[in-house]
Length: 226
Image 1 (cartoon, rainbow, N blue to C red):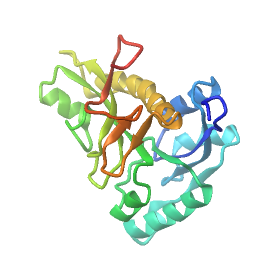
Image 2 (cartoon, helix red, strand yellow):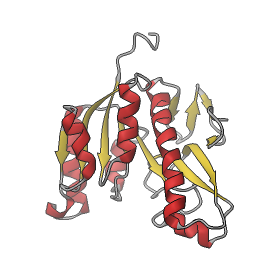
Image 3 (cartoon, rainbow, N blue to C red):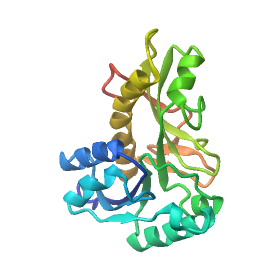
């Protein structure tokens, strides 16, 4: 089957907030650059601003409020049951601010991509931009990685790098990094949809059928990753 004959990849997008990476994904779909079908956008927060655009575009939106669940495991079971009815081939974590349980991660092993605002393995977790400035980093960026049980610890697929300037604040640096997130997330999803990107049974990233020994890298000045 050629790429032209292959149907769009069914995906589900998980969000918690404003959904700017979701917007980048929807933009790429609208322009024909990204061969995917969004089966649903799911949020753990009923007030997530990112639910507005997909709802206007006729994409199914679902809220599973974590505050209404008994505990983390109960939330993940409800989330998993909901996702499975949608039959996606890929879960896209686009600003989904929940730590997922091992059972959930194992269920979707090799089928979850996450975006993180740092050059992993540097600065997993929160407040990455402030931490990068405080550490005196000359370079910062964003990473796309497969999700594993280790928070922000899954194998990295693609990164974008930006300089850190002497007068940067966490907000100014965050804005520069976010622009790059919007470039690399649709690209990584496209690779997965085109069957160029996969995670094998040994937990290795495969790109075009070969082990990816180092993440692909984009800079603000380059159009193609190297």
